[in-house]
Image 1 (cartoon, rainbow, N blue to C red):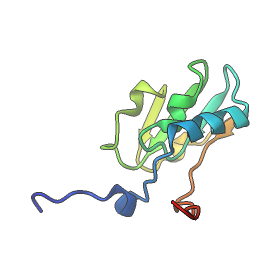
Image 2 (cartoon, rainbow, N blue to C red; image 1 turned 180 degrees about the horizontal axis):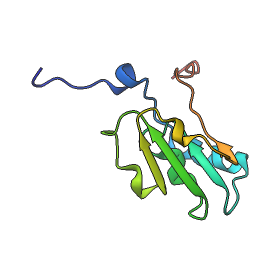
Image 3 (spheres, rainbow, N blue to C red; image 1 turned 30 degrees about the vertical axis):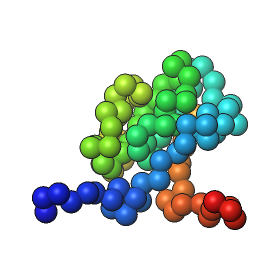
Length: 105
């Protein structure tokens, strides 16, 4: 319908990772130069952007209209793909449901 706004949270269970949280996740994961990293639910690429440029990044995303992930990953697969399976040093994943909000927010 013309004029409709797509609710990505509802349609794709899309909950964007805040940049600071993405940086913390990458630091805690101890991502190292030359490792292969799979981001199976890349969204707009927040976690990929936090990765060192020396890491081989593969992104998988159902919704190709979210962002052009090619700027943040060496390999981008749109849709569900078994070809993303392989030998990974790290695979990231976001919770498919939002985390509960703290009181006072």
